[in-house]
Image (cartoon, rainbow, N blue to C red; front, side, top):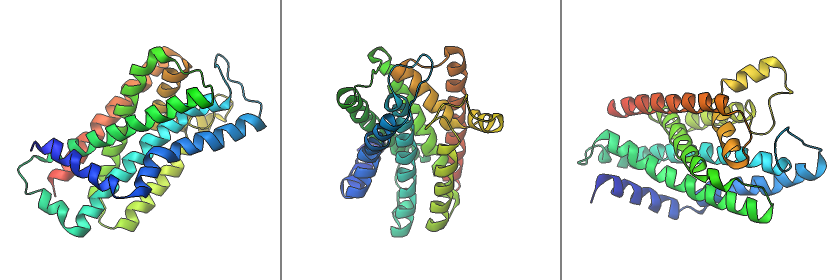
Length: 250
C-alpha cells in the first residue's frame, strides 16, 4: 500500500473510533454558528459597509477559520497518542519518508476540513439564508486547504518539540485564546483601538478569515486580501519546513 494512503486510512480509523473527535471536527463549529451567530443577530444592530446579510453572515468566515484551527490542533495532538503507545517510533522505521508521514497526516486533515466547510456553508445558506457567493467556492476550498495545512504544520512543531501532553495542551489553549480573539474572527477591526488593530493585522488567523469573508460574501479589498493570502502561504511554507525538520530530528 502507498505510504500516503496508509497514513490517511490510519487517521480515518482513529477518528472513526472517537465520537468526540467527530463532533468537535464536524459539528462544533456549526453549533457555534447556529447558537452564537443567530443569538447576536437577534440582539444587536450589526452593519458592515458593503456586506450583505447580518451578523450570522459575517460570522460564517470566523466559524470556517475556527474549524481549520481546531481540526489542525486535534490532528497534531495525535503525535502524543502515538508516542504513548509506541507507534510513533515504530512508524519512523517503516519504508516511508518523514515528508510522506507529515503530508499523509495533513492530507487527511484537509479532507476533514473540506467536509466540515461543505456542511457549514450548505446549512448556513439553506437554514440561515446567508448569501454565499457560489462563484467563489473554488477560492473557499483553496483557503480551507492551505489554511488547515498551515495550522497543522504549526501545531506539529510544538507536538514534536514538547514531550509532555499537558504542556502541549497549555500551549494550544493559549494559542486558541490569543489567536482567535485578537483577530477579525468575531468582529470587524476598523472601529477598534489602533494597538489592537495592528496586532490583529499581524495575526495569520486574520489573514485566513479575511479571505474566507471575501470568498463567502465578497467583502474586502482585493489588493489587501492578496497580500494577506500571500503572507499566509509564506507562513504555511515556513511552518511546513520547520515541522519537517523537527520530524527528521526524531
